[in-house]
Length: 269
Image (cartoon, rainbow, N blue to C red; front, top):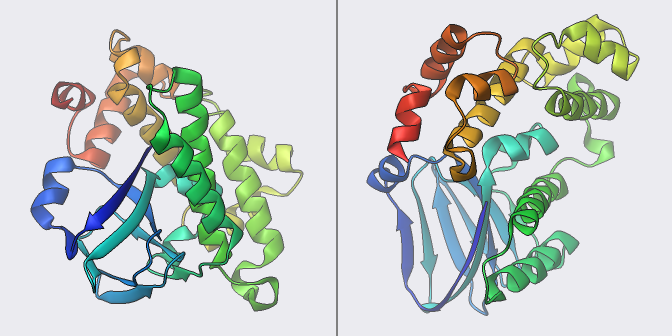
């Protein structure tokens, strides 16, 4: 999680392919125009204009450019890991590069929250950092929900009830990632729905239960491996804490997902 502000005379801010390669992040960023001038944002072949007070959701894994017509920039950026947002809003990627209008509550909340965090004179302690990370992820997911379809626009393919079950299932999975025996049946029993219905919900969300659990375990492991507080923890202990039953499997699926071993990720940091 990171928040920041840019105020001053800036004509353009760009993020290139080389920047992406050097930072190796897959974060999602909510950009809020906190100035008085209009901003232009370009990414993935799309262009949007942000009026003062408006925001847009972009991704760090793709090149982008922010243009300021008169050079007077006032920008707030809040970012967090992609999986944190997906846990809260399964289809948020459909809302990338879609403007959230200025008067929305989520934009006002984001501005107030970031103002407090950015204005702190002393580094926040671990509890505040943990809660702030969750709050930023919640705000970004809320922004994605604001620009999502209204209840009247829900398609039969993925209706309100199905979407709600999926979000509950994802939350339950996040609470049980350390259990290597977590199964489709456990989740369906907890939600009081049939296993076949639950599988359909995940398919409509673009994934499967097994794939989603594996991705969440890997992302949790990645975050633990990069956490300096857990530097002395053995890799095998982190693997077990994330629900993997043996180190061989953990190393194999981790390498397949991130193109490096857990040890290499630690050495990189």
